Image (tube, rainbow, N blue to C red; front, side):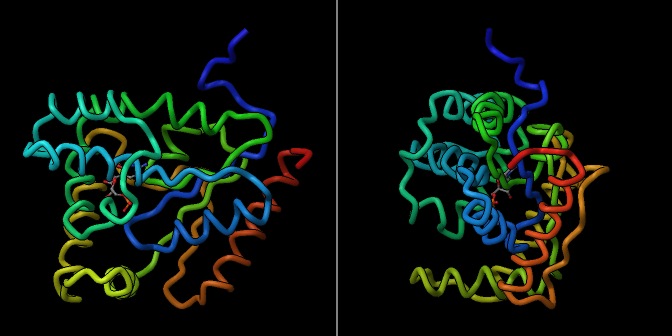
Length: 224
Ligand code: C5P
């Protein structure tokens, strides 16, 4: 019998949500290594849809087209460097506001979360919509300036030509859109633990995240 996608799972499911460049990707992949769990960066799915729409010369605001692209998405096939380009984050946040796009990607994410043993997923609505049944929920934040600085350095490292001011403006715009949309807005789940990484090194943030998960795991009685 196939389990219902919204049913609880016996594995260790870790939901990591937060705004752009908050450090959630680094934290989530570190947790996946620490707890030996598979990891899904759900932002990459929305980025792949945004890139797919741009690739056919479409407008990411076009809900019907974006939904069609999302329904045909084959995860893992998108070019990693291309989905990280500056304009693709913006396109991702536009396509992510369409309910059809979110519906098309939901089952895939829930199946990933529910695999035997558990999983780590990061995004905007993992703790609230995709895996409300997660064992541990983290909401990772940092000041807009610190987030913009981190994202700008990532762009420089990838050879993208973009100014700090452009990145800061982009982050502000994406935050506002992700928080203000009707479909699965960015917000902490009621039972999420807030982790502010503004003044934390990567190591300190990773340690804090691990402790949060260990505490939630022990409280839930999960065996992992
Ligand atoms: O996490 P990342 O910045 O790569 O995500 C790109 C965009 O995809 C976000 O700005 C957000 O609009 C959207 N997204 C989402 N829900 C998720 C993950 C990403 O709406 N679970």
